[in-house]
Structure formats: C-alpha cells, structure tokens
Amino acid sequence: MTRNSIKTFLLLATLTVLLVIVGRIAGGQVGMTIALIMAAGMNLIAYFFGHKIILWQYRAQPLPEREYGWLYEMTRRLTQRAGLPMPKLYLIPEMQPNAFATGPSPSQGIVAFTAGLLQSMTPEEVEGVLAHELAHIKNRDMLTMTIAATIVGAITWLVDMLRWSAFFRSSRDREGDNGLGLILVIVVGIVAALAATLIQLAISRAREYEADRTAALMAGRPDGLISALAKLHQLTHAIPMQQANSATAHLFIANPFAGAGDILRNLFSTHPPIPKRIEKLRQLKMSAHRLA
Image 1 (cartoon, rainbow, N blue to C red):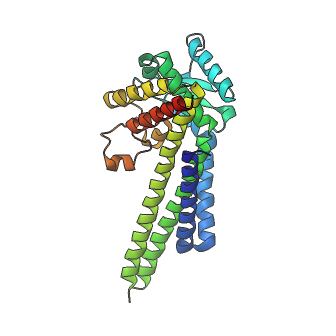
Image 2: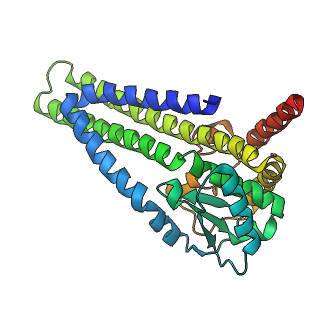
Image 3: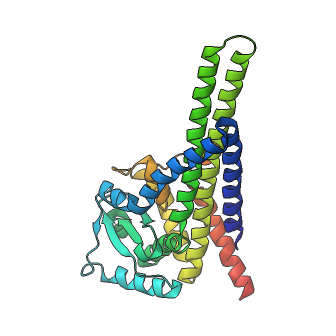
C-alpha cells in the first residue's frame, strides 16, 4: 500500500468517526442510519448513472477510431500493460486542454479528452494524460470518491437535523441557557460540515497524486505526464472552459477553474497544485534512476 493509499484510508476513517460523533449528537443511532441511507441512495444513483449525465453535460461524443487510430492503439497498449479492459473514448468540444475518466467500474471505463488537449499536446504528452486517467480507473477512484461523498452527505443531513432540532427546542423553551446551547449546536454543526468537506477535498487531492504515480509506472516514464502537466498549468489559466461545472471539476486531470494558487484556494481545491505534482513526479524519476 502506497503512502497516498494509506492517507486516503486514514481520511476515510476520520470521516467515518466524524459521522458517528455527529450522528450521536444529532439523532442517535436511528438518525445516523437514516441520514446514511438517504445519502447512500443519492450517491449510488450518481455512481451508476452519473457518467451518462456528465457526458451529456459536456456534449461529449464517441471518438471515431478512423480519425484517431493512433489514440486507440495507444490506449490498447497501455490497458494491456495495466491489465485493464479497453475503455470507451470520447471527445469534448472544448478548447481548454483537459481530460477526465468516469464510469462505475473498470469494465465500463470511459476516458474523455477535450479537443484542445488533442490539438495542443504531443503524442508523448497525450500518453501521459491517458495513463493518468487509466490510473483513476485502475485505482477505482470513482468508488472511493462515492464513498467519501456518501459519508459527507450523511454528515450534512445530520448537521441540518441538528440545527433544526436545536432551533425548535429553543423556540419552545427560551428560559435558562437555551440561547447559548443553540449557538453551541450551530457552531458544532458548522465546524463538522466544514471539516467533512475539507477531508473530502483532501481525499480527492491524494487520489490525484496516486494517479500521477500510477500513470508514470504505467507509461514506463513520467516525462510525458510532467510535460503535459506543465502545459496544462499554463493553458487552463489562459483558456476558460465554457461548460465547466464545479460539481464535476474533481474529475478532470487539471482543475478547469484554475486560479492564482494561494493557500486558501489550495485548501479548498479538488486538485493539488500542479507545480507540486510535477515536483513529485520528478522525485519519482530520480528515485527510479538511483535504483537502476
């Protein structure tokens, strides 16, 4: 198990502990179970059918193999090396260079590229991006993020339940310290919801690092991905994505809402800063050279 995989496991465990604590405060075992079932139901629907909605949202169309035979051949080579089924390939009519992977399982994997990426990247860079997206499929990151979203959704339900129950209790009885109790409950709820969101984002960033590492091993070298990330860092700032949606930003190899990269933005980002991703890949390359 790699360092990023351990980090993901610990973050998911922390989310679970937070769910138990908030559940006990808000509604006991029954309230926690109801919230978890409701959140799981919504996220399971998103897990099994969300990829169709995402492809429709970004107006993605199947990539014609006749025109992109080189990309299909590249995909077959990488999937055979990684022991993966052949994914479906799609084209997104956007000029911002970007790509994402989706699908409920490796056997139903989908990789979508923007037209801007295929036009601006060299074959080696495209291979690096493709390997990164195949790594997400291989690592079952859609499932990991669905589990995280389910727990965060349950915590959000419980926080809402906690806030409303405290409000009604305070309305019925305004004597004693109920006003202070209401403020305390609201503060606890806000802190719990914020903590859950930050943990979910941290899991997303850990999965990006792990996909970069897996991609470098899959491609046999990190050079293509390093070059592609450097180009993405520059062009996602310069070229906006017309159909970008914050709810699906975590799917892309680079955040389509690329910003200035300050500390607060990085804290609430679904992606690690690209310069740090490049630095880690270069460290991986140096380690491989030392072992060779």
